[in-house]
Image 1 (cartoon, one colour):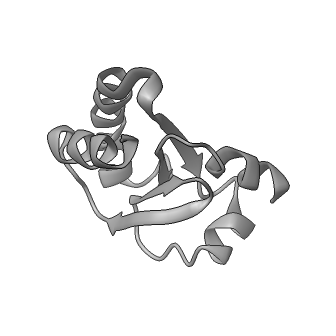
Image 2: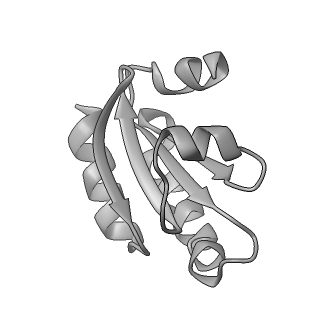
Image 3: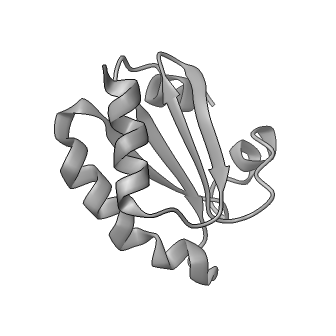
Length: 99
């Protein structure tokens, strides 16, 4: 869990995508997240977290449905949403927290 603390304790927004390879909605988010990462560049970070491989973390954060997207900045949760999102929405939210 200490690695998780390091991941989210950045002064740029960090978008976490909790997913599994067997969940269709999760898999369909992959290209969207690539677009978001490309758009925000070094003003943010996009990290995909496989729930099957990070079970304890998913439980600790009460991840119930997939995909679940969470934005942290300076170690603090700023935004959370379950379900698919479009790239423009996510880019806008990331930019909002980047300033």
